[in-house]
Length: 275
Image (tube, rainbow, N blue to C red; front, side, top):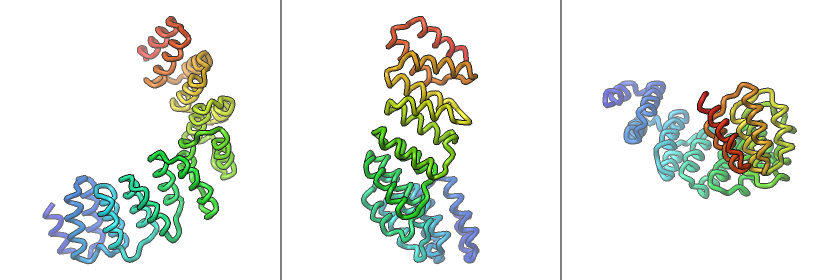
């Protein structure tokens, strides 16, 4: 490690070499090394360089505390949107929502990454209402939501009305609902809310399916009280050539148990064990 730092002193004008030092630090996953590199960049004056400052800030956002992230953030005189977003990510990683929101409100022009970070931060800490409130504010600011925005929002929905509104916003945004990630999120949401008609509608219109698509549909049927329908979807999945995973089997065995059909229990278990 010392040899790299000695070379950094020799190549004082080499921003690219200092960037390589940061790359090496990321591979080491060492916060002690990160602080050492930061100290040397500070001596060279490179910590005030926006690109290297952002890269160092990224290190601290991964390994440091909220206070350390803010301290390093303040060292960057010419902050760009990347600087703000890295700082925001570091604060949210520590569940420091209040400070993160203050930083967010100071961003001159928050982009979709900034908005997604705050929405995700609220959602992951259980503040679904705050997450949902951010969405119309984002739209009023003229920021176009991404697929990730909708994936986060769908995970927070607790009513069919809100779910359908977000679904409608996805359609108006021009996003392809045949996208497997977005489609799976919709199926999962409608299944959890017991709106199976919509869950099947999304499922049948998807151009690509995966095991998560099937699991979401099967789980939705079972959790809505339709055990036989859940088993029907399991058989359809097998007929379509998809192999069940552990989650699939746990759902269908629960469905069989609830239906008191032990014969199906053993048949389904044998299907899984033979894969």
